Image (cartoon, rainbow, N blue to C red; front, side, top):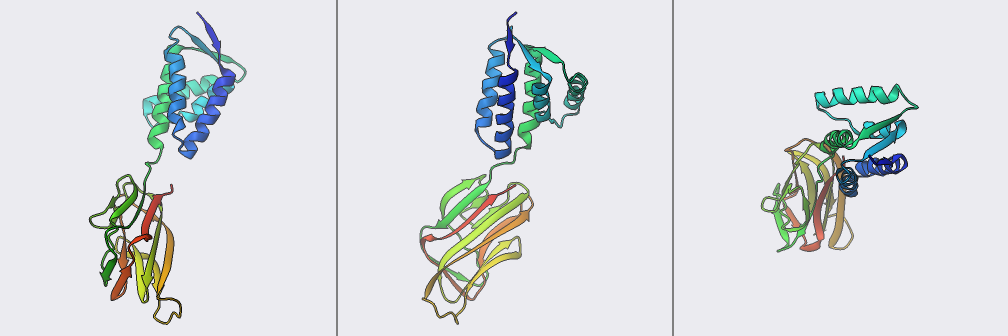
Length: 239
């Protein structure tokens, strides 16, 4: 039976694998596939891991499954109680360990959610309280934004960042609304001595639950938002 010493390789792989998980890098999937391919394509191979490398793999394997937890605890105990030992796993055992770490790691990764929209068809003239409907979509990852209603529905709970920007004449009063609560506003007063049309922007970071609604609404009697890429509404899930 062929012996493959992969301690150094796997230690480096696991370091990069952990970093990519934290950053949400798509290369995680590719590196995991590469490691699986190494094992599955060498079915008669025994992979020899030192305790340090195996500890790193165990630390990634935080599964929520009780049976998986029990198996990992047993394996953890074996490694940590034999810190100087080299543990030899055949391909079948290592495949099971990889499956546990895959099961434990990937379900905990946050869904990717972001959107960025703008006024495409025609400029918006809004009455008091009316929702601004941005019909031009640049990004809508997670499909949370509805271009028919102008409302973004949070697909998952978390902390979000929202940005509204508009090219508007005075007077203008535009709100970012979370459910029925105003969480941010932009305003041009009639007392402003500047040019008639001005560029406005407001950014907020808020906690939201799954199913919460976020929109841009007019806060005055008469609101105008210019057509084109001057005016938009964006949001993203931060964490």
